[in-house]
Image (cartoon, rainbow, N blue to C red; front, side, top):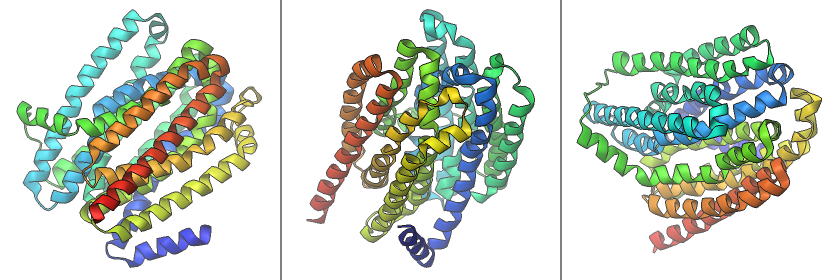
Length: 424
Protein backbone atom coordinates (compact mmCIF):
# COMPACT_ATOMS: atom_id res chain seq x y z
CA UNK A 1 0.00 0.00 0.00
CA UNK A 2 2.87 2.38 0.75
CA UNK A 3 4.29 1.83 -2.72
CA UNK A 4 0.86 2.64 -4.16
CA UNK A 5 0.75 5.92 -2.24
CA UNK A 6 4.23 6.80 -3.52
CA UNK A 7 3.10 6.10 -7.06
CA UNK A 8 0.07 8.34 -6.63
CA UNK A 9 2.21 11.16 -5.25
CA UNK A 10 4.55 10.78 -8.22
CA UNK A 11 1.59 11.20 -10.56
CA UNK A 12 0.55 14.38 -8.77
CA UNK A 13 4.00 15.91 -9.21
CA UNK A 14 3.96 15.18 -12.95
CA UNK A 15 0.44 16.52 -13.51
CA UNK A 16 -0.56 20.08 -14.31
CA UNK A 17 -0.42 22.23 -11.16
CA UNK A 18 1.27 19.26 -9.51
CA UNK A 19 4.30 21.19 -8.31
CA UNK A 20 2.01 23.72 -6.58
CA UNK A 21 0.11 20.89 -4.92
CA UNK A 22 3.30 19.22 -3.73
CA UNK A 23 4.72 22.51 -2.45
CA UNK A 24 1.58 23.45 -0.54
CA UNK A 25 1.28 19.95 0.86
CA UNK A 26 4.78 20.23 2.26
CA UNK A 27 4.20 23.65 3.80
CA UNK A 28 0.82 22.70 5.23
CA UNK A 29 2.46 19.63 6.75
CA UNK A 30 5.02 21.84 8.43
CA UNK A 31 2.21 24.02 9.80
CA UNK A 32 0.54 20.94 11.22
CA UNK A 33 3.84 19.90 12.78
CA UNK A 34 3.92 23.30 14.45
CA UNK A 35 0.35 22.93 15.67
CA UNK A 36 0.30 19.28 16.72
CA UNK A 37 3.70 17.63 16.88
CA UNK A 38 5.26 20.36 19.03
CA UNK A 39 2.53 19.92 21.66
CA UNK A 40 3.08 16.16 21.31
CA UNK A 41 6.67 16.67 22.45
CA UNK A 42 5.40 18.05 25.74
CA UNK A 43 3.01 15.17 26.49
CA UNK A 44 5.40 12.99 28.56
CA UNK A 45 6.44 16.02 30.60
CA UNK A 46 2.89 17.26 31.15
CA UNK A 47 1.66 13.75 31.97
CA UNK A 48 4.21 13.58 34.77
CA UNK A 49 3.72 17.12 36.09
CA UNK A 50 -0.03 17.83 35.83
CA UNK A 51 -1.29 14.22 35.80
CA UNK A 52 -4.49 12.74 34.40
CA UNK A 53 -6.67 15.23 36.31
CA UNK A 54 -4.93 18.23 34.73
CA UNK A 55 -5.19 16.59 31.31
CA UNK A 56 -8.90 16.15 31.90
CA UNK A 57 -9.45 19.80 32.77
CA UNK A 58 -7.57 20.92 29.65
CA UNK A 59 -9.61 18.48 27.54
CA UNK A 60 -12.90 19.71 29.03
CA UNK A 61 -12.03 23.35 28.32
CA UNK A 62 -10.89 22.50 24.78
CA UNK A 63 -14.17 20.64 24.11
CA UNK A 64 -16.23 23.63 25.26
CA UNK A 65 -14.16 26.18 23.33
CA UNK A 66 -14.43 23.98 20.21
CA UNK A 67 -18.05 25.14 19.96
CA UNK A 68 -17.06 28.81 20.02
CA UNK A 69 -14.13 28.21 17.68
CA UNK A 70 -16.54 26.69 15.19
CA UNK A 71 -18.89 29.65 15.58
CA UNK A 72 -16.11 32.14 14.86
CA UNK A 73 -14.90 30.08 11.89
CA UNK A 74 -18.47 29.88 10.52
CA UNK A 75 -17.45 27.72 7.59
CA UNK A 76 -15.24 30.45 6.12
CA UNK A 77 -12.29 28.05 6.05
CA UNK A 78 -14.09 26.41 3.12
CA UNK A 79 -16.36 29.03 1.53
CA UNK A 80 -13.86 31.91 1.74
CA UNK A 81 -11.04 29.63 0.61
CA UNK A 82 -13.12 28.58 -2.39
CA UNK A 83 -14.08 32.17 -3.25
CA UNK A 84 -10.56 33.58 -2.94
CA UNK A 85 -9.12 30.67 -4.94
CA UNK A 86 -11.50 31.49 -7.79
CA UNK A 87 -10.74 35.25 -7.68
CA UNK A 88 -7.12 35.35 -6.58
CA UNK A 89 -6.01 37.34 -9.64
CA UNK A 90 -8.47 40.12 -8.76
CA UNK A 91 -6.87 42.03 -5.86
CA UNK A 92 -9.91 44.23 -5.22
CA UNK A 93 -12.24 41.22 -5.01
CA UNK A 94 -9.78 39.37 -2.78
CA UNK A 95 -9.58 42.42 -0.49
CA UNK A 96 -13.36 42.55 -0.30
CA UNK A 97 -13.64 38.87 0.63
CA UNK A 98 -10.81 39.08 3.17
CA UNK A 99 -12.26 42.18 4.86
CA UNK A 100 -15.80 40.83 5.09
CA UNK A 101 -14.61 37.52 6.52
CA UNK A 102 -12.32 39.17 9.07
CA UNK A 103 -15.03 41.52 10.39
CA UNK A 104 -17.59 38.71 10.42
CA UNK A 105 -15.28 36.50 12.49
CA UNK A 106 -14.56 39.31 14.95
CA UNK A 107 -18.29 39.93 15.39
CA UNK A 108 -18.93 36.23 15.92
CA UNK A 109 -16.06 36.09 18.43
CA UNK A 110 -17.61 38.88 20.53
CA UNK A 111 -20.96 37.08 20.57
CA UNK A 112 -19.23 33.81 21.49
CA UNK A 113 -17.38 35.38 24.42
CA UNK A 114 -20.61 36.87 25.78
CA UNK A 115 -22.26 33.41 25.67
CA UNK A 116 -19.25 31.74 27.32
CA UNK A 117 -19.09 34.30 30.11
CA UNK A 118 -22.82 33.84 30.78
CA UNK A 119 -22.37 30.07 30.98
CA UNK A 120 -19.47 30.35 33.42
CA UNK A 121 -21.54 32.59 35.67
CA UNK A 122 -24.69 30.44 35.69
CA UNK A 123 -23.62 26.77 35.50
CA UNK A 124 -21.77 25.48 38.60
CA UNK A 125 -19.41 23.08 36.79
CA UNK A 126 -18.52 25.81 34.29
CA UNK A 127 -18.02 28.25 37.16
CA UNK A 128 -15.65 25.77 38.80
CA UNK A 129 -13.59 25.70 35.60
CA UNK A 130 -14.06 29.36 34.69
CA UNK A 131 -10.37 30.31 34.71
CA UNK A 132 -9.21 27.65 32.25
CA UNK A 133 -12.27 28.18 30.04
CA UNK A 134 -11.57 31.90 29.69
CA UNK A 135 -7.86 31.33 29.10
CA UNK A 136 -8.56 28.65 26.49
CA UNK A 137 -10.94 31.05 24.73
CA UNK A 138 -7.87 33.07 23.72
CA UNK A 139 -7.39 30.43 21.02
CA UNK A 140 -10.36 32.00 19.21
CA UNK A 141 -8.79 35.43 18.54
CA UNK A 142 -5.51 33.61 17.90
CA UNK A 143 -7.09 31.64 15.05
CA UNK A 144 -8.75 34.78 13.67
CA UNK A 145 -5.43 36.63 13.62
CA UNK A 146 -3.80 33.70 11.82
CA UNK A 147 -5.88 33.31 8.60
CA UNK A 148 -4.19 30.23 7.21
CA UNK A 149 -7.27 29.74 5.01
CA UNK A 150 -6.21 32.81 3.03
CA UNK A 151 -2.72 31.49 2.34
CA UNK A 152 -4.25 28.15 1.42
CA UNK A 153 -6.57 29.83 -1.10
CA UNK A 154 -3.65 31.72 -2.64
CA UNK A 155 -1.64 28.46 -2.63
CA UNK A 156 1.34 30.31 -1.16
CA UNK A 157 1.91 28.70 2.23
CA UNK A 158 5.68 29.11 2.35
CA UNK A 159 5.52 32.78 3.43
CA UNK A 160 4.33 31.99 6.92
CA UNK A 161 5.43 28.41 7.51
CA UNK A 162 8.97 29.03 8.79
CA UNK A 163 7.85 31.89 11.02
CA UNK A 164 5.11 29.66 12.39
CA UNK A 165 7.55 26.86 13.15
CA UNK A 166 9.97 29.14 14.98
CA UNK A 167 7.18 30.77 17.00
CA UNK A 168 5.58 27.47 18.01
CA UNK A 169 8.97 26.00 18.91
CA UNK A 170 9.62 28.90 21.30
CA UNK A 171 6.26 28.60 23.04
CA UNK A 172 6.60 24.83 23.25
CA UNK A 173 9.95 25.26 24.98
CA UNK A 174 8.29 27.63 27.46
CA UNK A 175 6.09 24.74 28.62
CA UNK A 176 9.18 23.10 30.12
CA UNK A 177 10.31 26.38 31.64
CA UNK A 178 7.05 27.61 33.16
CA UNK A 179 4.97 24.53 34.01
CA UNK A 180 6.43 23.06 37.19
CA UNK A 181 3.45 22.04 39.37
CA UNK A 182 -0.01 20.48 38.95
CA UNK A 183 -1.80 23.84 39.22
CA UNK A 184 0.27 25.19 36.31
CA UNK A 185 -1.89 23.22 33.83
CA UNK A 186 -3.68 26.46 32.99
CA UNK A 187 -0.49 27.75 31.33
CA UNK A 188 -0.66 25.13 28.57
CA UNK A 189 -3.63 26.65 26.66
CA UNK A 190 -2.28 30.14 27.42
CA UNK A 191 1.02 29.39 25.71
CA UNK A 192 -0.76 27.82 22.74
CA UNK A 193 -2.88 30.95 22.36
CA UNK A 194 0.13 33.24 22.54
CA UNK A 195 1.76 31.18 19.79
CA UNK A 196 -1.20 31.74 17.48
CA UNK A 197 -1.35 35.46 18.27
CA UNK A 198 2.34 36.00 17.51
CA UNK A 199 2.03 34.03 14.26
CA UNK A 200 -1.05 36.07 13.43
CA UNK A 201 0.88 39.32 13.59
CA UNK A 202 3.36 37.97 11.05
CA UNK A 203 0.55 36.67 8.83
CA UNK A 204 -1.26 40.02 8.83
CA UNK A 205 1.96 41.82 7.93
CA UNK A 206 2.46 39.59 4.89
CA UNK A 207 -1.16 39.94 3.72
CA UNK A 208 -1.53 43.69 4.21
CA UNK A 209 2.01 44.99 3.68
CA UNK A 210 3.62 42.52 1.29
CA UNK A 211 0.65 41.46 -0.83
CA UNK A 212 -1.11 44.86 -0.65
CA UNK A 213 -4.46 43.36 0.29
CA UNK A 214 -6.66 46.20 1.54
CA UNK A 215 -8.53 45.92 4.83
CA UNK A 216 -11.76 47.82 4.24
CA UNK A 217 -13.80 49.36 7.02
CA UNK A 218 -16.71 47.11 7.95
CA UNK A 219 -19.72 47.42 5.66
CA UNK A 220 -22.25 45.64 7.84
CA UNK A 221 -24.76 44.69 5.10
CA UNK A 222 -21.90 42.96 3.24
CA UNK A 223 -20.67 41.34 6.45
CA UNK A 224 -24.21 40.10 7.14
CA UNK A 225 -24.44 38.65 3.63
CA UNK A 226 -21.06 36.95 4.10
CA UNK A 227 -22.35 35.28 7.25
CA UNK A 228 -25.63 34.16 5.67
CA UNK A 229 -23.94 32.79 2.55
CA UNK A 230 -21.81 30.44 4.67
CA UNK A 231 -24.62 29.34 6.99
CA UNK A 232 -25.01 25.87 5.46
CA UNK A 233 -21.30 25.08 5.78
CA UNK A 234 -21.34 26.48 9.35
CA UNK A 235 -24.17 24.13 10.30
CA UNK A 236 -22.27 21.28 8.70
CA UNK A 237 -19.20 22.20 10.78
CA UNK A 238 -20.87 22.81 14.14
CA UNK A 239 -23.35 19.95 14.40
CA UNK A 240 -20.60 17.28 14.69
CA UNK A 241 -19.90 18.89 18.07
CA UNK A 242 -23.23 17.40 19.16
CA UNK A 243 -21.52 14.01 19.35
CA UNK A 244 -17.80 14.91 19.29
CA UNK A 245 -17.10 17.72 21.74
CA UNK A 246 -20.38 17.07 23.56
CA UNK A 247 -19.23 13.55 24.46
CA UNK A 248 -16.23 15.11 26.22
CA UNK A 249 -18.36 17.75 27.96
CA UNK A 250 -20.89 15.12 29.07
CA UNK A 251 -18.09 12.88 30.29
CA UNK A 252 -16.85 15.78 32.43
CA UNK A 253 -20.23 15.97 34.16
CA UNK A 254 -20.62 12.19 34.60
CA UNK A 255 -17.05 10.97 35.07
CA UNK A 256 -15.01 14.01 36.09
CA UNK A 257 -11.56 15.14 35.05
CA UNK A 258 -9.88 11.73 35.32
CA UNK A 259 -12.26 10.11 32.82
CA UNK A 260 -11.78 13.07 30.48
CA UNK A 261 -8.02 12.74 30.82
CA UNK A 262 -8.13 9.08 29.73
CA UNK A 263 -10.37 9.90 26.76
CA UNK A 264 -8.15 12.79 25.71
CA UNK A 265 -4.97 10.74 25.98
CA UNK A 266 -6.39 8.02 23.74
CA UNK A 267 -7.88 10.31 21.13
CA UNK A 268 -4.93 12.71 20.93
CA UNK A 269 -3.02 10.52 18.46
CA UNK A 270 -6.15 9.94 16.39
CA UNK A 271 -6.53 13.72 16.18
CA UNK A 272 -2.98 13.97 14.83
CA UNK A 273 -3.89 11.43 12.15
CA UNK A 274 -7.07 13.37 11.50
CA UNK A 275 -5.10 16.56 10.98
CA UNK A 276 -2.81 14.79 8.52
CA UNK A 277 -5.89 13.84 6.49
CA UNK A 278 -7.13 17.41 6.78
CA UNK A 279 -3.84 18.65 5.33
CA UNK A 280 -4.35 16.46 2.27
CA UNK A 281 -7.95 17.67 2.00
CA UNK A 282 -7.02 21.34 2.34
CA UNK A 283 -4.18 21.10 -0.19
CA UNK A 284 -6.53 19.67 -2.80
CA UNK A 285 -9.53 21.89 -1.93
CA UNK A 286 -8.52 25.04 -3.88
CA UNK A 287 -7.09 22.86 -6.65
CA UNK A 288 -10.32 20.87 -7.01
CA UNK A 289 -12.37 24.08 -6.69
CA UNK A 290 -10.70 25.32 -9.87
CA UNK A 291 -11.18 21.95 -11.60
CA UNK A 292 -14.54 20.92 -10.17
CA UNK A 293 -15.60 18.97 -13.25
CA UNK A 294 -12.47 16.82 -13.45
CA UNK A 295 -13.39 13.39 -12.08
CA UNK A 296 -9.88 12.03 -12.62
CA UNK A 297 -8.39 14.63 -10.26
CA UNK A 298 -10.94 13.84 -7.54
CA UNK A 299 -10.27 10.14 -8.01
CA UNK A 300 -6.55 10.71 -7.47
CA UNK A 301 -7.23 12.72 -4.31
CA UNK A 302 -9.59 9.99 -3.06
CA UNK A 303 -7.00 7.26 -3.47
CA UNK A 304 -4.31 9.24 -1.65
CA UNK A 305 -6.56 10.28 1.25
CA UNK A 306 -8.14 6.87 1.78
CA UNK A 307 -4.82 5.00 1.52
CA UNK A 308 -3.28 7.22 4.19
CA UNK A 309 -6.35 6.77 6.43
CA UNK A 310 -6.25 2.97 6.23
CA UNK A 311 -2.51 2.89 6.96
CA UNK A 312 -2.94 5.27 9.89
CA UNK A 313 -5.77 3.23 11.40
CA UNK A 314 -3.78 0.00 11.21
CA UNK A 315 -0.68 1.56 12.76
CA UNK A 316 -2.60 3.13 15.66
CA UNK A 317 -4.53 -0.08 16.31
CA UNK A 318 -1.45 -2.31 16.39
CA UNK A 319 0.86 0.02 18.29
CA UNK A 320 -1.64 1.50 20.76
CA UNK A 321 -0.01 -0.06 23.87
CA UNK A 322 3.47 1.08 22.83
CA UNK A 323 2.28 4.62 22.02
CA UNK A 324 0.40 5.18 25.30
CA UNK A 325 3.19 3.70 27.45
CA UNK A 326 5.82 5.74 25.62
CA UNK A 327 4.13 9.11 26.03
CA UNK A 328 2.18 8.74 29.27
CA UNK A 329 2.58 7.55 32.85
CA UNK A 330 1.06 4.27 34.16
CA UNK A 331 -2.10 6.08 35.35
CA UNK A 332 -3.02 6.51 31.65
CA UNK A 333 -2.86 2.75 30.90
CA UNK A 334 -6.62 2.47 30.25
CA UNK A 335 -6.30 4.98 27.40
CA UNK A 336 -5.00 2.09 25.25
CA UNK A 337 -8.59 0.88 24.79
CA UNK A 338 -9.71 4.35 23.76
CA UNK A 339 -6.95 4.63 21.15
CA UNK A 340 -7.76 1.22 19.66
CA UNK A 341 -11.46 2.03 19.40
CA UNK A 342 -11.00 5.44 17.84
CA UNK A 343 -8.22 4.39 15.45
CA UNK A 344 -10.85 3.09 13.01
CA UNK A 345 -12.56 6.49 12.89
CA UNK A 346 -9.80 7.77 10.57
CA UNK A 347 -11.25 5.73 7.70
CA UNK A 348 -14.71 7.27 8.08
CA UNK A 349 -13.30 10.77 8.56
CA UNK A 350 -11.51 10.23 5.28
CA UNK A 351 -14.80 9.34 3.56
CA UNK A 352 -16.36 12.54 4.94
CA UNK A 353 -13.48 14.62 3.57
CA UNK A 354 -13.44 12.90 0.18
CA UNK A 355 -17.16 12.95 -0.56
CA UNK A 356 -18.28 15.83 1.64
CA UNK A 357 -15.84 18.73 1.80
CA UNK A 358 -14.04 18.00 -1.47
CA UNK A 359 -17.03 16.92 -3.50
CA UNK A 360 -20.44 18.09 -2.25
CA UNK A 361 -19.24 21.54 -1.14
CA UNK A 362 -17.22 22.09 -4.31
CA UNK A 363 -20.16 20.99 -6.46
CA UNK A 364 -22.46 23.41 -4.61
CA UNK A 365 -24.44 20.83 -2.60
CA UNK A 366 -23.79 22.35 0.85
CA UNK A 367 -27.42 21.82 1.88
CA UNK A 368 -27.27 18.08 1.22
CA UNK A 369 -24.10 17.79 3.27
CA UNK A 370 -25.64 19.95 6.00
CA UNK A 371 -28.74 17.75 6.25
CA UNK A 372 -26.73 14.52 6.44
CA UNK A 373 -24.39 15.91 9.07
CA UNK A 374 -27.30 17.29 11.10
CA UNK A 375 -29.21 14.00 11.19
CA UNK A 376 -26.15 11.87 12.00
CA UNK A 377 -24.98 14.31 14.68
CA UNK A 378 -28.39 14.32 16.37
CA UNK A 379 -28.24 10.52 16.45
CA UNK A 380 -24.78 10.76 18.05
CA UNK A 381 -26.05 13.36 20.53
CA UNK A 382 -28.85 11.04 21.65
CA UNK A 383 -26.69 7.92 21.94
CA UNK A 384 -24.04 9.86 23.90
CA UNK A 385 -26.20 9.92 27.04
CA UNK A 386 -26.55 6.16 27.64
CA UNK A 387 -23.09 5.26 26.32
CA UNK A 388 -21.24 7.85 28.44
CA UNK A 389 -23.41 7.25 31.50
CA UNK A 390 -22.96 3.47 31.52
CA UNK A 391 -19.50 3.04 29.95
CA UNK A 392 -17.73 6.31 30.82
CA UNK A 393 -14.73 7.13 28.58
CA UNK A 394 -15.06 3.86 26.64
CA UNK A 395 -18.67 4.75 25.89
CA UNK A 396 -17.62 8.21 24.72
CA UNK A 397 -15.06 6.67 22.35
CA UNK A 398 -17.62 4.18 21.01
CA UNK A 399 -20.14 6.97 20.48
CA UNK A 400 -17.69 9.06 18.47
CA UNK A 401 -16.64 6.06 16.35
CA UNK A 402 -20.19 4.88 15.61
CA UNK A 403 -21.37 8.37 14.66
CA UNK A 404 -18.39 8.97 12.37
CA UNK A 405 -19.08 5.59 10.74
CA UNK A 406 -22.71 6.52 10.06
CA UNK A 407 -21.68 9.97 8.82
CA UNK A 408 -18.93 8.73 6.49
CA UNK A 409 -21.09 6.10 4.79
CA UNK A 410 -24.08 8.44 4.49
CA UNK A 411 -22.02 11.18 2.81
CA UNK A 412 -20.37 8.70 0.46
CA UNK A 413 -23.69 7.22 -0.68
CA UNK A 414 -25.21 10.67 -1.21
CA UNK A 415 -22.19 11.88 -3.20
CA UNK A 416 -22.35 8.86 -5.48
CA UNK A 417 -26.06 9.47 -6.12
CA UNK A 418 -25.36 13.13 -6.93
CA UNK A 419 -22.52 12.19 -9.25
CA UNK A 420 -24.71 9.75 -11.19
CA UNK A 421 -27.48 12.33 -11.58
CA UNK A 422 -25.09 15.01 -12.81
CA UNK A 423 -23.58 12.57 -15.30
CA UNK A 424 -26.96 12.03 -16.98
